[in-house]
Amino acid sequence: EDQVTQSPEALRLQEGESSSLNCSYTVSGLRGLFWYRQDPGKGPEFLFTLYSAGEEKEKERLKATLTKKESFLHITAPKPEDSATYLCAVQAPSSASKIIFGSGTRLSIRP
Amino acid sequence: DAGVIQSPRHEVTEMGQEVTLRCKPISGHDYLFWYRQTMMRGLELLIYFNNNVPIDDSGMPEDRFSAKMPNASFSTLKIQPSEPRDSAVYFCASSSTGQGASYEQYFGPGTRLTVT
Image (cartoon, chains in turn yellow, cyan):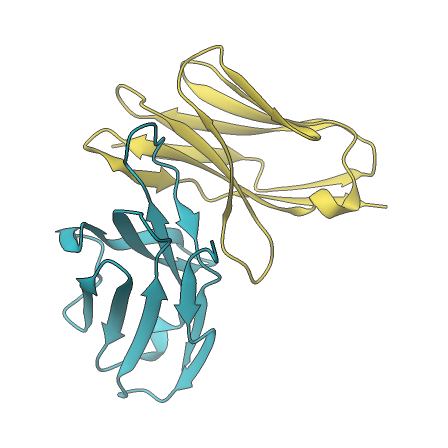
């Protein structure tokens, strides 16, 4: 069964304390992996797409990386405004337009 | 572009009533998705359309749920009759598969549905 597992479920960091969120997947023939950010009361907001092992994408304090079995979202020197739930998703093997979401990591940054 | 537009933003209704949620996708996008999000089950895909045609409705929980897309700029998700377990946030998303597209989906702000 195609699955996307994110860890940890929740992470609390001090402002400036760097860390990484993990997304492991079990889909055959990965086409694309997505990272989204979701703020309370809002819809998920697209961050990155990764296609092949070794690929990296950066946006401000966030960097996403991809291996053959997992992806990491590295957050460097986070600020309180980076607090959100981060969702990982993969394109379903059966249909490129359909994506399978993980349950997310709730990130909280204390000032 | 205004992004994906959903209405209403909040809906409170009594058990047994009909509920209709509305969505306007981003102009030019050819895929439209309806999701439901709860604390217990996370983000679940209910149904998606391509060029206004339903492609996969395997996530629709039961016959009480129905969705339509009469044209490229409008879709509805209807629940009839509604039940308390339908309480959730319902999201609409759209994506483009045109040349150069990478299939990422863009979400609306959601409709928070409460069934009492």
